[in-house]
Length: 364
Image 1 (tube, rainbow, N blue to C red):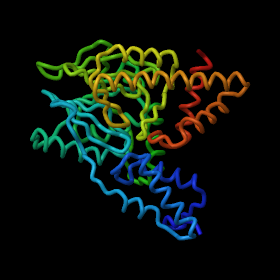
Image 2 (cartoon, rainbow, N blue to C red; image 1 turned 90 degrees about the horizontal axis):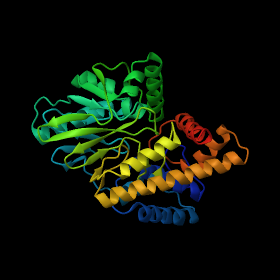
Image 3 (cartoon, one colour; image 1 turned 180 degrees about the horizontal axis):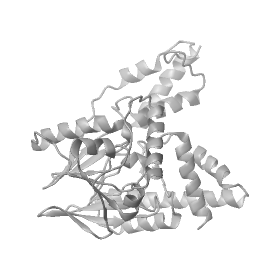
């Protein structure tokens, strides 16, 4: 008899148990009290023991009983920057004469984010009418822009982005595509709300090397980081050298695995990582994981990301040299590199992006 997981959901293979636990860890349905590897092995041992005795076991109950540690909902990176922790879409607020939000997350999370942002601004700086004055977009992808329409309805903020992003976000077909991707993600997580992505107001472009004033003592430097997309930019907060790279530096999964994301150009993507390595970054505020703190750790992450990027490029080249087409190579890369990716949403979106990655190597 297979361990019982609720409803009509049964598992019979050890690998299936591992995938289940990995997914639970990725989406943080549970709260961790130990390192993930140690915890995973403990759970697997318990499950396999019960399975060998033909004993039904509710795995979700076991997981929740093992770890019930409350995680922080927010924290200060420094006195000016608040990180709002989230399973896969953390948000960053820069406090100053005006309050700046870095990216918006997907539409499905926007109501929750609005409550968190307003509550945290009230608690931290005492704003009785919490406000976000400006949204800074690192690029135009659905999971970075999807919540912007809902949040703008609440805060009426300005939106600053690269020239390419501002051009894209004014096109009806692009707006429709971003909304479709957000609706697909909502369906994936069982969200039946009517929240959508639509046209943004107060949308303006910023240029590479431009300086955005935060206060009399701090400013944000705009950095051109193409490769993930053609419209990608990063933001570097001075003083303190806190970097908001968007997806230009790759994705770090909860288990510290790095996923390269060169969706528009491999060469531009590698050059962008190399450019980020030249900066004296103290904190790197990742958009899909917790911040990386300390110069040495930031440098180590970027070097590891660059190495992994080259490894994936070489793998793609080998598959193409064997005569496989773009779609076949994309499926193979998906199976090898992205089987349990934590944030990409519906599979068809990820496959579409992986096809872009393969083409960026093929056309190089």
